[in-house]
Length: 349
Image 1 (cartoon, helix red, strand yellow):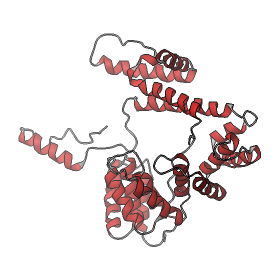
Image 2 (cartoon, rainbow, N blue to C red):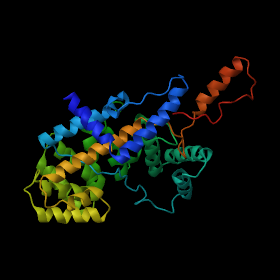
Image 3 (cartoon, helix red, strand yellow):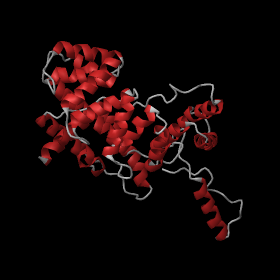
Image 4 (cartoon, rainbow, N blue to C red):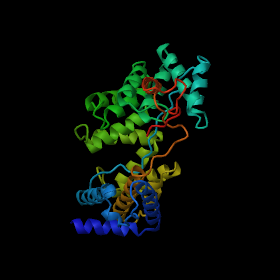
C-alpha cells in the first residue's frame, strides 16, 4: 500500500503545473537550508519529502471516499454575508469610514490599527455591525492576530442583537475544529436561529450538517429540505450540491434532468465544479472519480501553500504594541538607549 501511494504521488509530480510548483519550492527551500549548511540541497522525489506527507494522507482519504461513496462538499468558497444589509446607512458615518480603511488593502498598517481602535469604541457604544467586523478580524487575522475565543465573543455580541450574518458566523465557528471554541450543540442552535432570520449561508451549512452527520445525527430528509430551500433562493453552493446529488443518485433518486437544471444554475454563478459535471452528464460514474482527482490536486496545492516560506501580506501582522513596549523596557534595562528601537515594524509570522 505504501509503495502504491508513493507511486501515485510521484505520478502527480509529473504534471507540469505540479512539477513547476515543486521545483520552485525546492529552490526556495535550498536557499533556506543554505543559511545553515554549506552542503548542496538534496533533490528528492515529492513522495520522499516528509514536509508533504499530507499529500499521501489525501490520496488514501480520497481512495477510501470513493470506495465508500462518501458524500463530499467540494468546490465551496467561504462566503460571509453582508453585515450592512439591514444597517441604517445614515446612522454612523464614522463606522463607514473605519470600515473602508479596514477593507482597503492599500491602507498603511498604522491607519488600520487606528481603525480597529475606533471600531472597538463603536462596538462598545452600541453598533452591532462593529462587533461583527471585529469578529471577522479576530477570526481571519491580518490586521489582528487571530484569536478564535475573542472572535466568538465579538460574534456573540452582534448575534445577540439579532444580526443573522453574525449568528451564522458564530455557529460555524463553534462547529469548527478549534478546541478553544468548539461547541457543536451551541453551533447548531445559532445556525438554526440564523436560518430562521433569513441567512442562506446558515441554511446551506445546516443542510451539510444533516446530510454529512459530522456534528449532528444524520437526517437526510431534513438536510434535503434545507438544501432545496437554499438552492431555490439562489445559493450557488446549494445548487451545485443538489445537482450533484441528482446526478450521482446519492440521497435522492437519480434524475439527470433535475441534475442538469441545478448544475446549470450553479455554473451560471461561476461554479467551476458544476461546469465540470455538466460536461460529463453522460458518464454516471466518471464524475465522482474526476471530482476525487480535483480534490486531490486541491489538497496538493494546499500542501504547497502550508509549506511555503512566510510572506509579508499587504496588511501584515505586526508585533503587538504591548509586546513592543516590553521589549523596549527590557533593552533599556540591559543598557540600550531609550531611543534605540530596531524592533519597530517587526513582522510576526
